[in-house]
Image 1 (cartoon, helix red, strand yellow):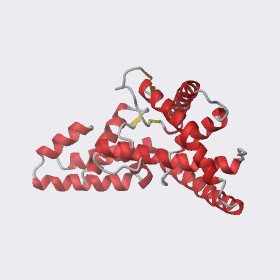
Image 2: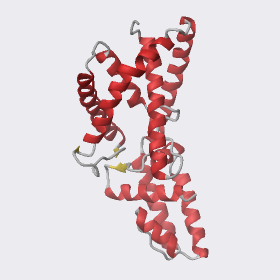
Image 3: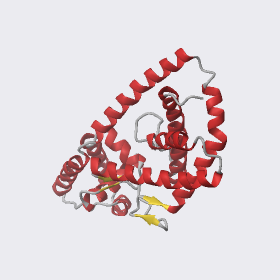
Image 4: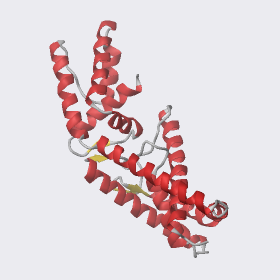
Length: 260
């Protein structure tokens, strides 16, 4: 089957969706709540789609599973490292962190992830992709044109909306911090940032003081837009690279949103 751009895009969508399902289920089980793990609003994890398509293009003539495993492991790790670095520079935030895993590189990639990606590459090239090609070849060409055109427009719009919504997160966190501290001081209280500190505050507050916490939750909604709140919820290990304080604020916001 010819590797035309349209079919590659269809496969990108498929594997990006599979990656979204995998990530969302994995994180949801860990967090014990439903988490839309995708970077985009739609059910897609672009990094999985890109990785799968690159593997298909580069490895479609390979037959040795060991070679496929090694190249997939190495290639996917490079892609994940570059993506982590690029997103950090663009948004001033670390979206995932493997520092708690052994054999990691700067917390961006780890050996366990590389092994998983290696097996995933073998599974895609030897098992899944041949069936995917057979099924997509059955789709009428006109339908392929329409699906690709509509999907491309939706993905582009989603990407623009997501990026525009996330930009300026650090500035929003700073304003939120100032507003919370100002309200706390007026109430004769003090406020410490951090997940554990927030949990202790929730435990110690009397019923009358709970109203102040509710007001602070409202501040979250007013200070951070929907995209920013979604990202903080969706990436439990997301932290700011601008300031440790901002990372602590993220922890507090995440805990506030979780308790709604």
